[in-house]
Image (cartoon, rainbow, N blue to C red; front, side, top):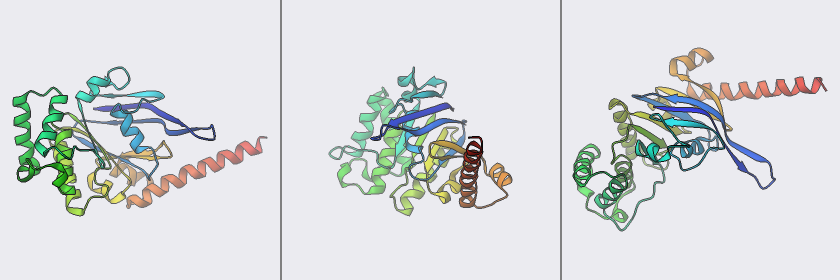
Amino acid sequence: MIQVENLTKIFDQKSGNPFYAVDELNFTVNKGEIVVLLGVNGAGKTTTMRMLSTILRPDSGTATIEGYDILTQPREVRAHLGFLSGDTGLYGRLTAREVITYFGRLYDVSPAGIKARIAHMADLLDMHEFLDRKVDLLSTGMKQKVSIARSIIHDPPVMIFDEPTSGLDILTAKNIVTFIHRCREEGKCVVFSTHIMREAERIADRIVMIHQGKLLAQGSWEELREETGLRDLDDIFIYFVEKIVEEASDELAENTDNL
């Protein structure tokens, strides 16, 4: 599972003022569950994903992946994690099989294990046709399947998807969503980030809403609808944004009155 505790990342701005890309974020993701990290562009989703995958180091707070701390046990975290984004780099001069094999070796998977996993993933993702074709000659959808395969060659229990359908055609995006549902069926812990409301509606067991680096709201569909009295996710998201704006305005007015 994933457990995020007060996760914070601060970047310096040219003005000299600190920018809180992620500000004391808390949430959990359980086994066999898909949690969608939902927010507009620039909300802090990608920064959160990069901290969870140990690419970025938080300034405060921490998170655990399968019980391993991202600060003190990054190697163990990476061994139990599969990370996929919409712009995963691939080696164009290698074949799909060679790329997947290379990453299998990086994860210390045995040669026999790599061969078995490639065969399994080729069946799962319908890759037999292009396994031995160079990546530069593959379509966008084929490349994304290779990216998936290289991310799960070590069969990780936790999967992180950072806007993996961004820029993809509708059929390729559908394949990604189908794969994510399979991960849940296998009991994997899945966290998926998106700014597309309809995509969140199709995928999520629970939704964690983020706005300007802060936790906006979180809960299951039923919980969010019951709390707001609304049915449409767009309306629910806007409801919570307007709520924090109103609370901030009230706080400012109160502080002004006390001056």
